[in-house]
Image (cartoon, rainbow, N blue to C red; front, side, top):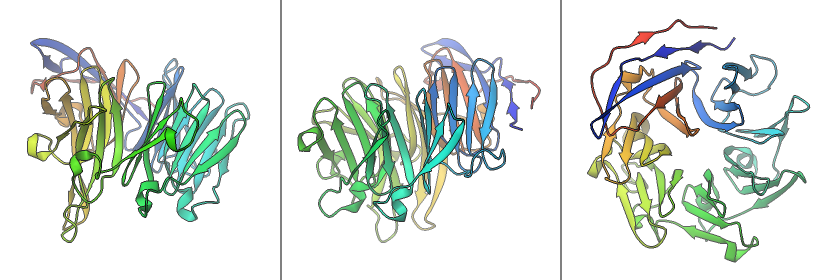
Length: 368
């Protein structure tokens, strides 16, 4: 049975513009490695690496698990999840898992193009206006017309660079743009135009991203009306010290690129994930050891996008078991923080620029 842990932090005080704000948080799915979060009306869907897919009823505050352990799903490792009123889609190493809500049944879609790696699905994005599911694969991009159940594949390789066709992140930007992050730049699709050369644009580190590094690998996006924020991967070695240098880039949608990195306040250059709440950007960060060739998680930071101030979050105040912040999701009220060991729901009345060290916590009992 799924374990739910409740922790009430009654007097954890934050300071923002001299205004005190009370912060409460709840811990769910302790020890689960969270990979992706999405929602539909009244339900939250959570993908994990090793424990399948979880559904949370906000109304009943109850969890339901799809997994091999629950004997209702034949896979436990997932990288992405998307949902509409009829289906849930989950990206795995071996294809696209599809849950038909009416039939209460999971099936698996395999893709013929791209070989074995073509079935490694790392990103999903559902467009409710067009009733389209975008499927980011290790090789190729796929578009699913949900109503017609028709799949269309795209090879978006730029020049001789196969990494420009290796997809890691997909997000909607308003009602007209879709951004696709790859291991070597970003594709932009303009929905108002018919699919063709005029509807697509590609930006890499030769045209943007301050022309830094050998290549730029996109891990996540967040959007403002006038700006786009890009989280990028860090991967460097002694022989390739400029391969993927990482950092958080800010693009004004025209010509100007700014960057946050260790040089100006970030605790690390690798970015796992991003989310926006009002005037603040949240980022899960990590560093890459070029000698050991290992990632080392460096926690969570809060960035004032107006003032540019960077504040590392003291995760001890949230009693997290892991400093690996894998995914972030804001539902309009609560910030859901996916980690390497558990899911945190953080309820805040104001985002904060500084965290005080004062805390008095009261633990509630664990329920099963």
